[in-house]
Amino acid sequence: NNVLQIKDSETKAIVWRTLWDMVRDQEIPASEFFELAFPALEKEQDYQMVSTLRGRVSSVIGYTVDKEKKDALYQRLYDLAKAKLKVVKPGTDIQRLWYGALRSSTNTPEQYQYLTDLYDGKKSIEGIEMTNSRKWSILFSLSAIDRQDLVEPRLAKLSEEDKSARGKNSK
Image (cartoon, rainbow, N blue to C red):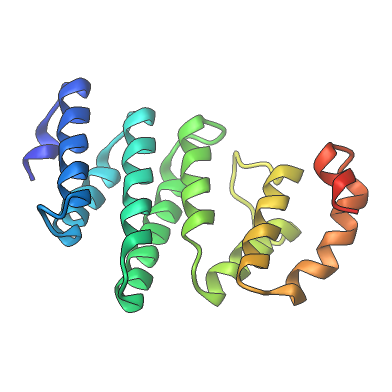
């Protein structure tokens, strides 16, 4: 994987943009993009590069029609995000980025349970405070999969606790 050997961040960004364009224009299959992108995400340390590449990976996953392949790709991204959360420095922007990747790639009942456990304080990630904003994001994720059984008991309490506009408007 020669892309991983590129040191100059501008050159690397151009190469990734070109690969992204080639996937978008159907000049290369998405599977080739993933085989380059996932190893790069495992090794990349630059916040901007990780952010851009993770966004493109998520976007290509979203365009994947085959549900089985899509589920496998979300699982791969979730597993990578969970692994990165164990090794990146707590409280950093890159840690928050990987937390976002974890939340947005959550796709199975077990993964949603993990998010719920984070929300409830049964589990934690050092450096990731369970803010009201993060709690709302988790509730939105649970609502999207129609898990009202998990949303309803938390919604009223969060609406009362959250004094922000979001909390006030949720009542």
